[in-house]
Amino acid sequence: MATSVAEEGLDIPATDLVIFYEPVPSDIRTIQRRGRTGRSHAGEVHILTYEGSRDIGYLFSARRKENQMKSNIAKLRDEIKKAPSTLYDYFS
Image (cartoon, rainbow, N blue to C red; front, top):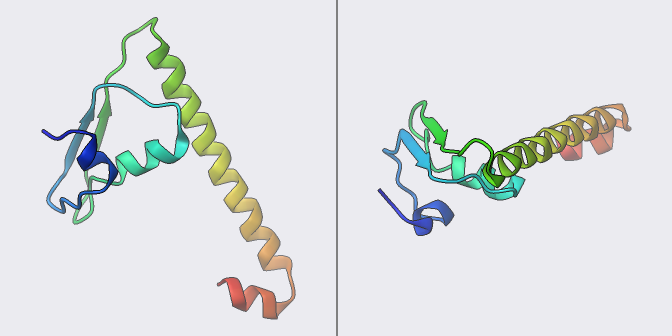
């Protein structure tokens, strides 16, 4: 068990299970929190929510923002591939 200190930056390589007691509405923070598990092998992340609470909104907000971020990255990658080869080589 750890506090938000582990969530924000401790490197605990053997961690293969993370349980969060609440979701956060920030996509970046959600990704960072999940990044604390599964570094040496596949891991699991469980986020506890309470039906009918703001937790559900936070969970879906972070997921929506993360999916939008992934979509934007894919679009940018496609644009870079269409660019002149010197630009593509620079970003590959």
